[in-house]
Image 1 (cartoon, each protein chain N blue to C red):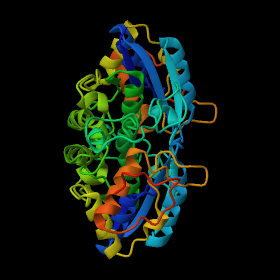
Image 2: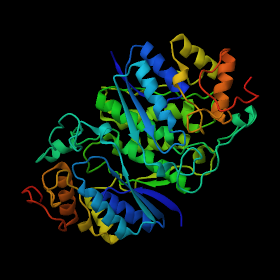
Image 3: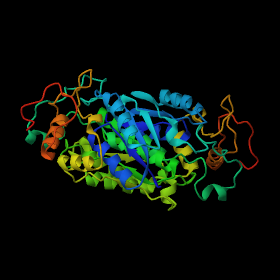
Image 4: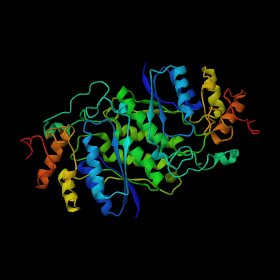
Length: 238
Length: 238
């Protein structure tokens, strides 16, 4: 089997991407990052997802949060703004909110690029999505294409022609409902995943942050209930 | 003063780059990385360089060495090959040696990109050089251009037009002798720097690895002696 490195956050997108990559026949090496995120429960979710999909290896990598200060998703530094809640669909679809984390996917993909070369592969999977998303620039197709072009000039195995780098983004043009439908067809148990940016201590989702709203809209669109626990289900999750 | 993030390894290239960047009027924020390198004495050298040049801030960032395993410059993983020694100029100038570290500058620049956005700047300095160098792909101008293009699609401040990202590489086309001459004119004390890939416990350079040979050739070309201590000066350092 061909090896591939896959970024696993513990969210529903990366769980679906892992199922798709395994279905394509890749032997998967998962990377998860701890970077001072408020929603550190996602690291536990990532371990559950990794166990369920059957990875060849799974590493949890610590990143010094100082490079991410100022994001409402990351503790430390100057007091970050609150995670926005109860925003309308229109608000979510315009601009880049305070939950944006500086250069996050660039750092994550850079680690994946290094580990891929160590493992002897050029295949990297990331579950970014540019349709039902928060407008983060490092989730868009032109960003991913530019990263791949850079990567093919960066590593010894790429420039010497042995291992061209491919950044696989199977979800990038899919709606959240399609992502969920795809995962369910592949047997993904979304009860293992977490999406909330501001979960309670017991892991229950807030149901009100952008990420919860996008998730709930996806399950509604897929016509099924979300199996995870919420602190309160907002009225608008129709 | 404009802020800039600068990567400081403790070697002579980054010391010169720091002096040049300060001379251009930038307020400098230094980043140094600990990644399991054999030559960890360079972190102490980086602190000396940072102190001498007068940085606004200097952070030492830890990177999990597992993503770099297999390089002869990094401990751990499968037994890495030895650091090559006593190679001819022709050998040094052809191919990519075992001291290559997978995607190292991509990870370093990604951290710099994140921190730059946190600090509110798009200016990043790195002392890469593609003339008297070891053939590492991530030191070449086309790689740096591709990283900059990617970076300008990656961050909120870049895509929203506030802070275009510039990767400054003032040394990239200079010979090692020119770099040293430039630094001396700016008052750099190269006695604070270290270049050896395989130094003794007391920090004395081996004088035989590629990096020592490039350094010695540079000082010879600049017509002055190298102020640092060597275990033994090779005959070929003429």
